[in-house]
Image (cartoon, rainbow, N blue to C red; front, side):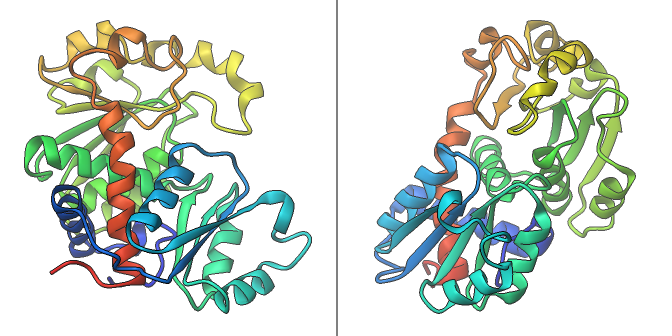
Length: 305
């Protein structure tokens, strides 16, 4: 891979992205041996987690290594100790670090001081591990990603930003439908558009137009962790962007339903949508495990031949 870290999807080339997905599909199909035997991955988490923590811990176990969970009370990174000190200490004791945090800047600073691979396990700016699982799920379903149209409904947040970057790298047409004031920024779209890979990014405020011709419809919560106090206001702002039967009817009859979970049913998505036969939401959740096994092997060990 072109980078020894994954702090952003921007760390990947189109070839890197394809390699991660190839290895993930191979692992899911054939399993893997103890490729990371004796290695330790530190999980430095400032935010709670279900899928991220479990998928990393199970991934390391299946690869013959182990994980070490370090909660926010134990380290208080950047306050109890400078980021650069924590990075250099952990680099001498573990073989890799996955960080789940709020701000992107401390994560980037940590990576700049770390001599072992650093993985963004979620920040307010990006969620690259989730997006690797999302693309893996779409590739399983369609055999290829190139030329697919992926419609995203909601805020231009960390998930949308990572999807935009990854879509261009993978040759996907990404359409982000957001209300005014909540869209991807011009900087986000400019960065995505400059990437190689042949995909594209379009921002719109029209959710119906976004889903027309889409292979999959994707949504996320309207208020992320730490923003729960904004939910009442956002319910009104995002009402027309709910992934429901009406929007499904405007999309192709075989368009799939996606969500990164946890889902707030009745807000950004309805039970009708998430429980429909078109839903691949729980395939996405499972594929966090397989995508992260591939990523860990490529960053910390050797991929299967």
